[in-house]
Length: 326
Image (cartoon, rainbow, N blue to C red):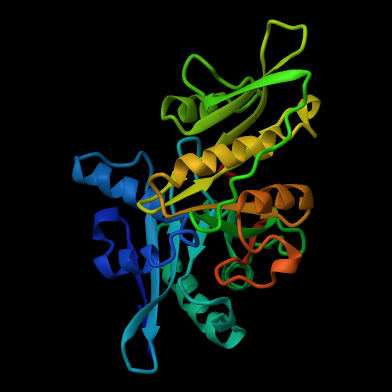
């Protein structure tokens, strides 16, 4: 589908996604951390003769640059996770300053038109997550086209994308209290989290070595306890993404989260060029911890850092859609 210089292409097989689209995603793997890992994994599965259990789709919007060359502007994914359906994810290799309303709106209108010609049901589009402008404009265009109200006034998640490199990584000690000892290691079986509703996700992450734990032993006790966990479940060729950081309330203010995030980041940078994560705008404490580890653009004194951008997850009317999980 095309409108003047804007073209939208839809691919329902991962191996059908053209090489130049992969190249565009790989130019900025932190920005593509919600799309590229699933795409690469799906390509491997398809190459081995397997198919995902439910339909997946990748939507590519391209347009001509000033030199008349077709360039990839946005990639949208409609994909499945290990637990349930993901939100619609957006990625772009374009700088935020280029994502003006005049640039984004006509492209989103074409994307929505293209989706209307697919068999994707309206209830599948339960939320969209991406750089602020992309998520907000898509939500508005989708509501206009389908009549399904969006919840842009109360985003499910509002965060900043940050990343750490080998150059920005800060290897500094965290003071250790004298009344406990600690151990940091991958969460190998038979360890599994016990939070209700998270068993399947935790078991998958443990089985695939995607989660590390920080255990502490308090003075006078012979029993260790899990203080913090860090999961990194979206990983592509050159980027790993920390997807979950949690510290037990009884173990906070001990430096456990910082210590564990630093060790996990150090481990991941052994094979990756970047480690990315999202930090919620309403969690300045986490932003401070991640900044101390070396994640850029989170310290207000640092100023603007290219690639460290605001992202939003915008939901749609829950009376119409079927919620998934990510």
